[in-house]
Length: 227
Image (cartoon, rainbow, N blue to C red):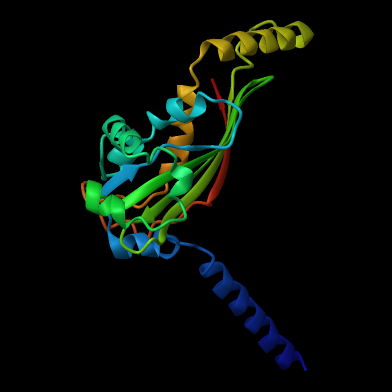
């Protein structure tokens, strides 16, 4: 009886050890299609704006290319691409996110198209709140190569020295003033940074195809950052 119990305990320990050793999800596992297709040239589409902030679309569009370029991809100049898209009546990304993307490979030479969906972009009592999702899709197969969401709050409170109730009231007042003065670009850049921190690096990065065993981060990330 004692021997059987001992064997059972060993089996449970082995099972736990095995399950613990397999909980790590690598980038190679999470983004296998991106590693398979190896996109080099990216086209950034204008954001899909699901908010009431009409300025969010244009303000956010200008801040997307930098983290992707730093990750080793060739990003087609966004402003030039925007002009072409407008002239070709293709400025509304909503029309293309679920459509075949081969035309963008033919016209721009893009290996993948970067879509962004803005679901929240608003002033809150403490600062700015954003919720943004990025979807990178292949122009060859239409497969989703990368998808990630960031819930980010840029918090302007806590920068006073008064303390107590007066300090809290000053916090709110400062937040209201500073939020009104900012162009929201800082919030967009921070959201981009958190989202693309997990993207497998591209051809022009020193670690190209060497990060497959790196641990992948959650596909939905939430952050509060002091302004």
